[in-house]
Length: 261
Ligand code: SF4
Image: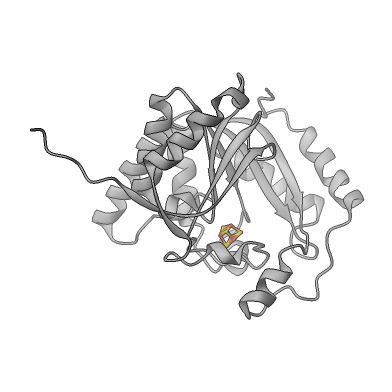
C-alpha cells in the first residue's frame, strides 16, 4: 500500500468570491492569514497574527475553485492575498501548484518581503521556494510600499532588502506583474515620489509590467483597530482626495516602459 502523505495545512483569514479588483476577470480571492510587516496604513490588522484565522487544506481551496470555474471564464481564476501569502511559503507553493494542475489562472498578491532571512542557509531555501512559486504564478500583484530604504523602514517597520531580492528573482523569471502603491498624504503624494517609483522599476527591465495602479489612502480600516483595541498610527490623517490621485496617475501613463496588456 503506498504511503499516505499528510495534507499541507495553512492558515486562512477569509474568502471573497467573485472578486473583481485583485487580478483579471472574476476571481476567487483567498486571504491567507499572517503578515510580518506592520504598515502604518494597514487596513487589515486582523490578518497580522500568524496563529489567527483557521486551518485550511490545499484540497479545500482547490475544491472551492473547481466549483467556481464556470464563473472564471477565459480571464478569471484564483488570487492568493492576505495578510501576506509568502509568510506561508510551503502552503502557498503547494496551493499554486495544485491550481496550475487544474489549469486555473493564478495571481499572487504580495508585498514581496515576507520570507527572506539573514541566515545564509535559510536565505538559500527562501530563494529556491520563491523561484518555484514564481513558476506557477501567472501574474504577480506587487505592492511596493516605498522605494527608498529609509522610507520603507519608516512605513512598514521592515527592511526593503527582501523586496529587492524578490524583484531580482521576478525579473530573472520575466514575470508578468501589476504594480501597486498606496499614496499616503504627506508621505508619498508628490509627483517626484511617483517619478522615483518609475526609476526604481526600471532597475528590473525584464519584468513584464502591464500596469501601475496608484491606490488612494483611505480610513476604512480604522474601525478594526478600535475593535482590536490597538492604536492606529495615522489616526488624524484624512483620506487622499481623488483629484490628487488623478494627477499622479497621469504621470504613470507617460511611462513608455510599461507593457500595457
Ligand atoms: S503588507 Fe499588507 S497586510 Fe501586511 S501590514 Fe502591510 S498592508 Fe497590512
